[in-house]
Image (cartoon, rainbow, N blue to C red; front, side, top):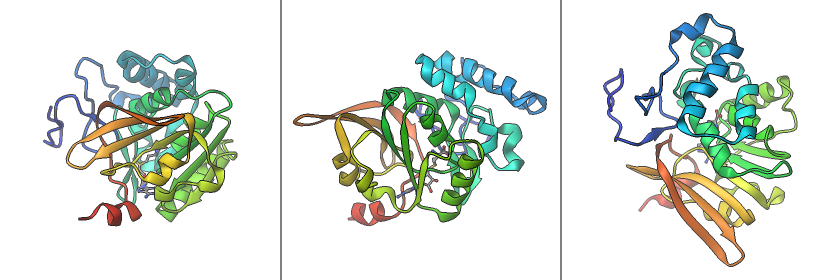
Length: 251
Ligand code: SAM
């Protein structure tokens, strides 16, 4: 599949965090720039119906969260007209806010209960943390770029998500003093899952992470009483994890 930029993405790969992909499913109508003149609420409703429900996300709590969180508040002012489009968007510092569908499907796959405690690695804009805060009782999120961590914390506070704990740092080591977590969502890709993150998962908890280099799979690691099960959910394309993981992965 080829998009406007001429970039080719392998068939079936779901673009989460790259700027190049508009829509991986040609049968799903994509909201156009016509959204730009509409009230954000109407554009958000179209986003949920056309991009998220149409692709099979059905958890009513996740759909309600996606209908509620004002995504346009988490993107830079110059990109607000595009906030509800079916693609990731630049948030500066060579980073992105993930495609809305990817945020929703990861939230659904995490199977969060009301009383869940969640860790996100890769705060970015803070949008996904706000969605998680609608679904869980405690949300912890770590961002390696200080300016993004600060701006996400400010946005979350301003929008009433001040209970989300935001930390500037390298998520490779997780947040040990707040563990164990019922779910860990990593929103940047690495060749392997950082061992410390697996160690901070509660029994029965699920870790979702894009794993791979030239090609990535969204992996789901579930902690059992005796170990872990691993499944590949589907191919994805996320921005790479930086920091310690790079040193640990080099030959
Ligand atoms: N979930 C975000 C949102 O809703 O905007 C999008 C996250 S973006 C796809 C990935 C983020 O992971 C970037 O902001 C990047 O700086 C961050 N990141 C990369 N490596 C990291 C690391 N080792 N620790 C913490 N954050 C990291």
